[in-house]
Image 1 (cartoon, helix red, strand yellow):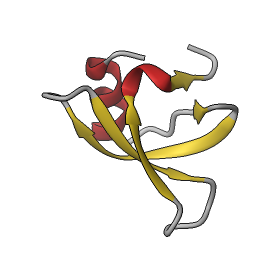
Image 2 (cartoon, one colour; image 1 turned 60 degrees about the horizontal axis):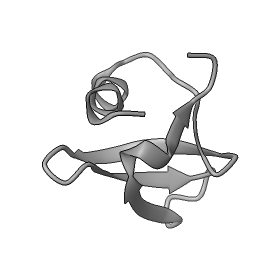
Image 3 (tube, helix red, strand yellow; image 1 turned 90 degrees about the vertical axis):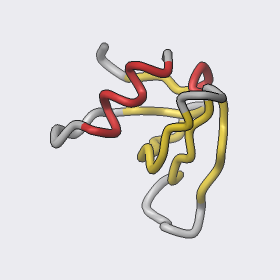
Length: 61
């Protein structure tokens, strides 16, 4: 995924299926300048990771 798409998903009111290494994630923040995203893995709010947006995959896109 690229930074623009990650930002679009983050800003959208719609729900999108996004995965990181096969796990479902929610995008919580996108750092456009560095090409990074903070994501919540699964349903646990405390389980967050900051990764390159190129590691994120939109399912069904």
